[in-house]
Structure formats: C-alpha cells, structure tokens
Length: 405
Image (cartoon, rainbow, N blue to C red):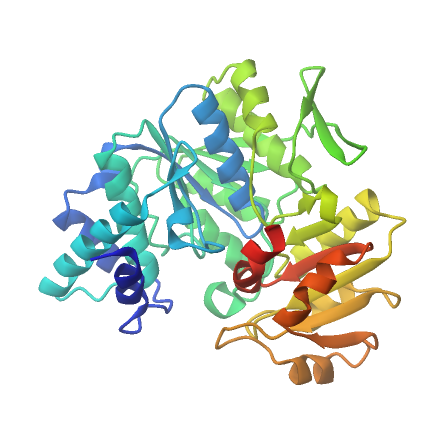
C-alpha cells in the first residue's frame, strides 16, 4: 500500500466523523501491545493554545537532547504532519505501512475505528517502535472521551485556555467544556494550567477530587516586536521567539512552568524558543506582508484582533476568509472585521463550508466583501497592504503551499 492508497483507506468507509468514547481505541491498542504504556507522555488539552504549547514544548525537549514525539491535529497539507519525532514528520512510506496494519487488525476484529482513532493508534505505535523518550500528545476534541485519553500515568497533563467551541459535543457553557477538558486529569497525577484560564475553578476542583497535584502558571514573559522580529525575555536574556501573538504570553507561561517541572536547562529552553515553529498560527511572512492564522472561534478571533492592533496598528488590512457552518461565524465577524477592512470570501472544498451567498446574507453588516477564487491568489499576494488569511484551518491547508511559495 502506498501513501495515496493509505489516505484513501483512511478517509473511506465513513471514517471521518466524531464518535467520542474510549472502548474502540482501547481495544485496538491492546491488540497491538498497548504502545502508549511504553512511552512517557505529556498530555495537552484545551480550546485555544494547545497546539502552540505542544509544539513549543516538544521543540524544547528535542533541544534538551530527548528523542521527542509530537502528535497534533489537524494537519494543514499532509496527514504525516500530525506525527513527528524530533520535528521530522513520519515518512509517507511508514504512514502507509501503519495505516494498513491498524486497519487490517481493526477489520479482522470488527472494530469500527474513526479516522482520529486510527491516527492516534498509529502515533502511539510509531513512537513506541522508535523508542521515543517523551511524547507530547495533543487531544483532538475535549479530553474525557478523546481517543488520546488512554495514557494511564502521564508524567504531566496540561490544560490551556478554555473557551466556547464544539458546543454541540462538549456543552454550551465554559463549565461544561472545562469539565470535559479536565477529564484528562488522572488520579494522583500532576496537572498544569494557567491562572487566567476561564475553566480554572473546574480544573482545580477536579484536581482536588482526584488527589492530583495542581501547578498554576502565573508568570508572564515580556514580549517585544522590533523591526518585524519578535523577542521574549528569559531570565533577563533577550531571546528570539518567532511565534507572534499576545496570547503566546499565556502559552509561554505554561511552557516555562512545564520545563521547570521537567528540570530542563535554560540553554535548551532558549534554543527551543528561538527555533519554535507552529505553521498557520499568526505566521507572518515578512517579504509578502502576509499573516496566516487559523482563528476559527470567537476567542481566537479576539486574540487575532488584539495582535493585529498591536503588531500592525497603522496598516490597511485585507482579509481572505472562510468558515465552516459548525462555527459561530456571525460572532467572529463582529469581532474580527472593521468597517474599512477589505474582505474576500473563499468557498473551499469542504462539505461543511459556508457559501459566499450564505455568509454574506447572514452578515449584512459587512459591506466591503467580495467572492474570491484561486485564480485571484497571485494578484492577492502582490498587494502591498497587510494581507490576513484566516478562518478555517481546512481552508488554509488547501491554499497553504501556494501562499508560501
């Protein structure tokens, strides 16, 4: 089986759907030797920031000399981006081999796995087979019934910022969502969160119930943006940090508390921050004056708005935007767009994507909006104004290679 065949198998038979629960993933993992029990795991949940925290932390661990696995979702362009060892994606050949193996076993034993469950099983098996020292594992959705929540004794669990998202699955209040995220807390484990987390009370109560040690990150780093470059201060040392976003202050407070708990040396921390990458999350391409950010819920839109006003306050803005019908796109529009912003709306290839007409009709307050197609991309990128590509990560993934090339 080659990579294209593996992708076809992965996306066929209705596997791309959400079916929360641990029974299926536990069954397949048992059949392949419970690889999740053979590696040290840092488990990360949250609504916003969990990808950044996972990526930064994994990079620091790599710089500290640990063979480090990283499992994240979704991907931008290729499925292989989701599973990395020391920042190197799983090869397409290995990916296909693991897909075939997992799917064959599941079919033989009549276990109906979702796409995410297949990928999660592959990640654990791949990391165990390659003897990673530590794996940073990001939840897909929620926490309590997320397929990643099979690690019995994580060395550290982390919960990043919590806000309203996936309300149809996780509940329509912060408290309900926080309860689901806090489901990753194991008895007598260690849980780390940040002091301003909206779900802090629920996290604290859950930690107490499970007799888990709660570590609270409270110290924010100083961050400065100078001549198109971003810097943070670590132990009075000015350190390059390429990831933009004022919200990174909260993420970094979590990361720095985590590396202190893990006893990582300062040199590795500085090197890890300097070389951190997290594509399409306030990713600024200076020579194109182009900003790419997957702000797909209201809180993420607020953070993008703050960051635009901080980093690019005096620049005219042109947005390229699209969204899914599962998102609160009306509220996002109120937050994100100003009257003088120029907005292009792109209908991308996804069954849940909102059409241009539907989006326009549901947001009559947006006057300066036009429909966009791929043929306009070259001219769009040549515009001198600040260009912001945002909204659905699926849309960004569809255009990403062309945006970067």
